[in-house]
Image (cartoon, rainbow, N blue to C red):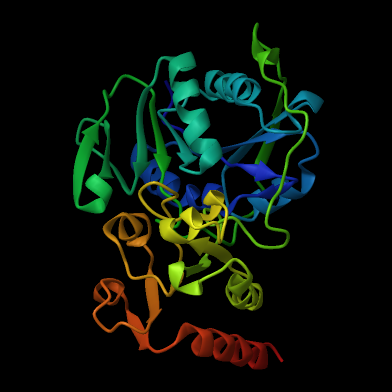
Length: 327
């Protein structure tokens, strides 16, 4: 086992996922203590632009697993490819973003490599004997726990997005290609088509800004004002469980305990009272803005800024002001 820290950097359509770049920050801190290198791994087919973008984030080495069979994400094929990178690098720690892909991939790689695994971590450090120690939230963020890995075993951790800032100012990194050798059974799952929903609106798990609407929007048509604000902010559109259950938005946009957990830099809650299950999914947001006619809404208790007014007046006005700033 080397002292290197390996980071799986997710890419889609030759664009690196921001959460993957963010993992390089704790990786650099850990490598400073182990005396090893930060090694980034890219998996895909046409990934030249992703490689160039990754190089700007400053890893010491970049391992590239390139093959036509890896063009679209497949859990089994990517598992085999990343396990090959682990075998080649023999790192002390493997970090992945706790994105949908990272959460799907991490346990598969852990099983294949015989590694220990902790998910959705928010802090990482090394103990005096060189073992990885991480902190992960429990009970929807109401408590945290420490997980300490065996010092003589590969440690795999998925890192919650937006917990760390992505590094900048990197220089030329050493690049190395690793061949992809399919494992028996990798073809059991075949990706025929990647379906995208929402048009030009981002997914809530990938955005730095989220504009969410609740049942107070009253209809799917009225969500247009939420989409308008999201577009001018380059944001994602989210929704409460009540809004999704009412059919105003698909459940793929639901934020909350039974939906998606998000940690954006800015979360704008429009007409969302703030039920416990919704707060559990977004309370990790850096800045929270609440718009509601009810001054006693629980959302105001967690909000950094609150507007007690009709969202049908406030949201269009806010959209117009943002448009003026763009000009």
